[in-house]
View 1 (spheres, rainbow, N blue to C red):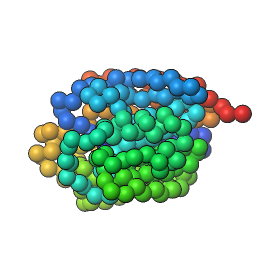
View 2 (view 1 turned 180 degrees about the vertical axis):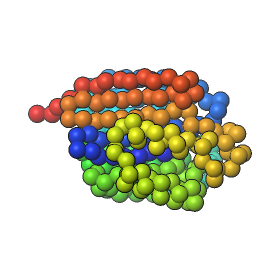
View 3 (view 1 turned 45 degrees about the horizontal axis):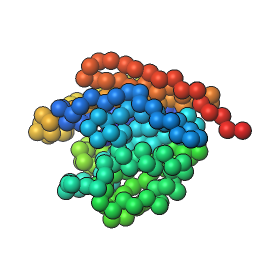
View 4 (view 1 turned 90 degrees about the vertical axis):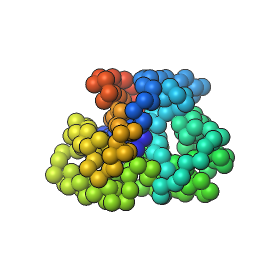
Length: 237
């Protein structure tokens, strides 16, 4: 839940997320499926808090969680609810933006969401006091990094590398995956060794949304395993 990229190609939307976590964190469960009245959710489930950092529904809408908002904050638990549970609550209720606007976030640790909903791209943030909403160009590529682990210098260097990547590579899923593997937390030279002793990139989750189908793939980097869930996209008439 710490590095997310978004790409729009001629025939697909590709969203990829690195999850940086403490080394002793329990493994996530993938795929986890939640049946609702009018749609179905798919996500990797965090065993500790029962939430998630990446969720897609069978209509082709997705939301991805990053810890922190505009700047690094001091964590001050206990909090009212896990941010991963908040993410599921927002996605369960249908219209992501409307639900975010009406959701009581008091007592929730700061976070941001990259949201792809109804073929529009949004960045939704909670800074601990106020909510913020930004519409992004869904036809452009974007890179977001968590403020809790990556300082401005690292983020700027990543953005430079991202610009070089998009200008020199075909934006195919496997190339984007390689970019994310290159930016695992343990491979970032500017990150302090004290952080690296506690945190690693435990997984990479990649979503490919096409006109009729969705491919949802979970790369467990600690076990070196790959799981893919093919989802038949629900076409609205």
